[in-house]
Image (cartoon, rainbow, N blue to C red; front, side):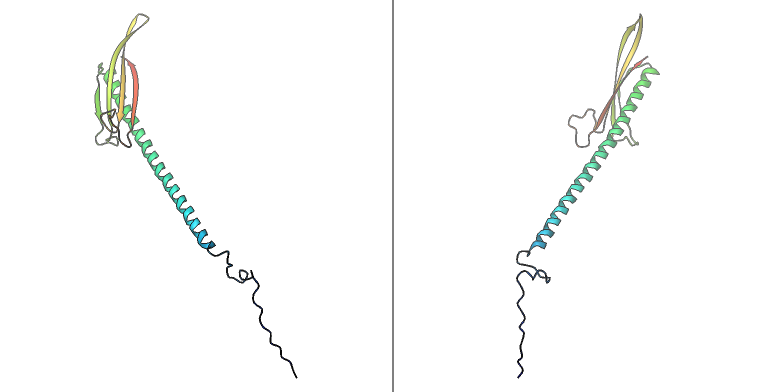
Length: 158
C-alpha cells in the first residue's frame, strides 16, 4: 500500500509580502506623500524663478530709463553752455525731445550768473543746472512707478 502524502503549501511568512512585490502595512501612502512633497517643492521653485525674472526685468527697465534721463540732462547742460558761451546769455528753459527716444523726458535748465575776482581780474561765471525726468514737471510732486530723474551741474567761465 502506498501512502500518498499531500503537501500543503505553507502560508507566506510575515514581512515577505514586500519582497514579493506587494506593499507592507506600514508603507501604504508613502508614494502619495512623496509625490505631493515633490509637487510642492517644484511649485515653490517655479514661483521663486518667476519672482527673480520679474525683478530682473524691472531692474533692467529702470536702468535704461536712468540712462535716458542722464542723456536728457546732458542735452540740457549742452544747451545751457551754448547759450552762455556763444550767445553770452544766462537763461533757463524747459526742453522736450519730441520724436526721439527721449520723448518721455523733459529737462528743466536753470542758469545763474556770478562774478569772482582772481588776482584783480573779474571773471563772469554761469552755473547751469539741468534736471531731467520722465514725469514732468521736474521734479515731480508725486512721482509714480518707474520715475527717474537725473541732475547735472556745470560752471562755465564766459
